[in-house]
Image (tube, rainbow, N blue to C red; front, side, top):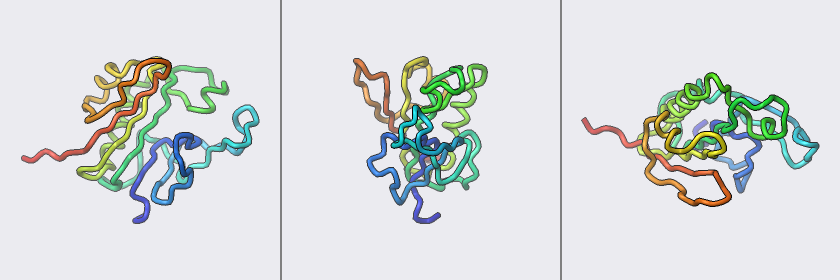
Length: 162
């Protein structure tokens, strides 16, 4: 795994990746689907390198230089609908704990001075509410307003010097 120093903790169908087979990245997801799983679209498939739950990852501490965290942002949607198949869904009873546990796991496997990229869509939960849940402030975030409700945040794991 030495050549895999980037982790995508919930890769889905890798839609925002320029190179969907980026060689230094370990692509993980809890789901797996063959091509055509969404409305018979043959260009979409979901085959992670490792099937894994982002809330409990089996990597040693400080394993990655860069972690990408794009968890499901839909909460309590019906299983089987197109959006849920595409992006996954969080349980409406446990989603806050699930996001906190997922962020904490991503933080745990991130090296000191490593970067964590967190993508979140405000379709249901506002960024300010999300940040209250994870209790870590990003260094940078995409502040665009308008049609897109997706936000990109960048965190750096800076160790405490005490």
